Structures are given as C-alpha cells and as structure tokens.
Length: 360
Image 1 (cartoon, rainbow, N blue to C red):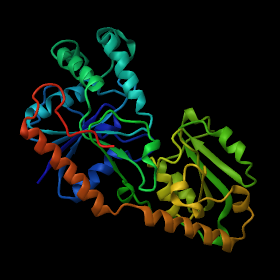
Image 2 (image 1 turned 180 degrees about the vertical axis):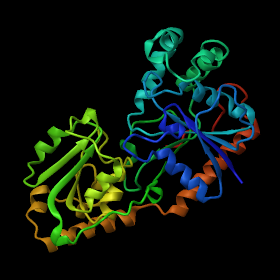
Image 3 (image 1 turned 90 degrees about the vertical axis):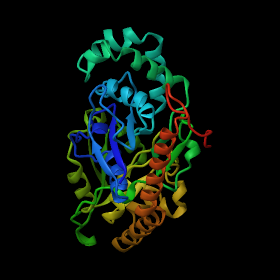
Image 4 (image 1 turned 45 degrees about the vertical axis):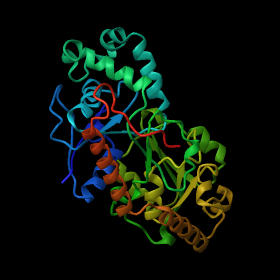
C-alpha cells in the first residue's frame, strides 16, 4: 500500500477546510489516490519530521511572499528533505497565476533574511522560531533550488478540452495535467421542474466581475455573490451556491487571463449536474465546440423546451470530455510511483532531486 503525505504552504493545502466549504484541489488528488488503495495523511508537518515512512510527499505551492503561505517554512523543509530520505516528491499548484510563485521566489532570494524574518507578514507563520535558527540554511537552499533548478513533477488541474499551451509555463521538468472532475464532491442538488426554474443567472466569484457582467447586456436578473474581493453584497457557502443552480436556468463563468486553457473550475461540473446552462466567455469554452456557446441574448429569448434542450447539450459535452475516475487514479498512482522510484534511486542527494527532461 502506498503511503502519501499531503502538505503544502497554505492552510487548505495542509487539510484545513475553507470558510465557504469550497473543496480544495488537494482533496481531489487525495480522493483519486485513495481510490487506488493509497493511505494518505493530509496535514501540516513538524520541522525535521521524518519522511522515510512515506512513499511520496505531495506538496502544494503558493507565492512564498503571500500571506496565504502560512506553512511556508515546513513545506520548504519537506521539499528539501523528501528525496534525501527516500520519499518521492510531487508538487502541485492550485491557482493559475503560478507565475506569482516565481516572482515571489525572486523577491525572497534577493535578501532572504530581510524578506522572510524581518517582514511583519511572517511573524505568525508556523515554525518561525525553528526557521530563524536551525532551519535557516535548509530554507535558503530550497528557495534557491526552486528558483534556479527544474521543479520535480508538478500537477495542474485542468479539463481535457483545454488548450494547455495557453497556460503560463511552469519551470518543472515534468508537468502532468489531470482532470479532477470525477472526484468533485457531488452535492444532492434540489432540482425543480423546468416550468418552475427562474429565468435568472447565478454568479459566485472570488474576484470582482461586475464589469464583465455589465458588458454581457443581460436582461434576466442575476444573483451575484462572493468574497469581499468580489464586491458582492454577500457570501454564501458552496453548497448554497450549488443548490441555486438547480432552481435557476443560468450560471455565469467569467473568463480567466488564459481563456481557453481549460483550467479546472467546479462550476462547469455543478452546472451540468444541476441541468442549468453555463454562460462563459466564448474564448473560454471554445475547446468544447461551437454547440457549447450561444450568446446571452439568444439564450434569454428561448422558451422552456429550448432551454432544456440546450442545457442537455451542454451537459452531454461536459460528460463526454470528463476524464474517467479510474483513468485519473491510474495516472496519479503511476506519477506517485515514478516519483518514489526516482527518490530511491538516489539520482541526486542535495537540493531538489533530478528529474527526466522537460515535457512540452
């Protein structure tokens, strides 16, 4: 049985639940590994905690100069020591703006002592006293390695229909793109009869998308909710947001800066399950084909029968493009096994372990 230690730099990457109930991508990776028979631990780690009892360490990255990097020091410690202790190392990113990680590494490495120790931001970070003293050489070594050497195998969550060339480039020697849709939490969505569905749009967001919505020229009402950054009137739990998909005809999905890349978002999965229509930027969903996108004015002019037919077309496309659960499990289990075998081979004993050539 494979034993997996899942940890990272941010609280959700260390198993802490999000305030809105949003299921973090690390939970989806672990579900896939468990489906393959792995034993997993999802938590923060202690400084110098032995790693030789684990087959792999799955470590999440965020910008190291971010307030989200609450467990930065111990995550760096794991990245440094895992290959030296025969523990495979696999990294992952959970935000498409992972170029910010490299920018943060550059900032840190210019003057690590001042950036990491003297900055007010880091005073409440986990294991700070250890980082200032015994852990300091190892932390600096790992920051420099992440900045200047190829990363180990790194996971990206994305739909199979995306154009991955549109994503920012990762400095990893092996990049693995997996679709975690099959392992997303499946809520029991209360779906009303089509005749009772509201002609309205639902938009839940972490960022301010008010201008994008205005530019759509919608005539149906819209329910706009989200975090403080979104400038929405209020926030809701994820299960409440998803439940509203089953009583409204439409769900809105604003484009990312890499529109069309297929970066994974659970709203596509939940909208399809709820039998609702997803209205996303045409550039965002071009990989699903022309039948997936219709302009908002055409959707809003449909009668109930046409709305149902179009929602079913969208759902069929999402289902057709979803990577099967067993395929995700098999791929991820093999990635972990490869990382463990590489660690045992002792290809490299200092810094980050060597990896195969870059995968385009």
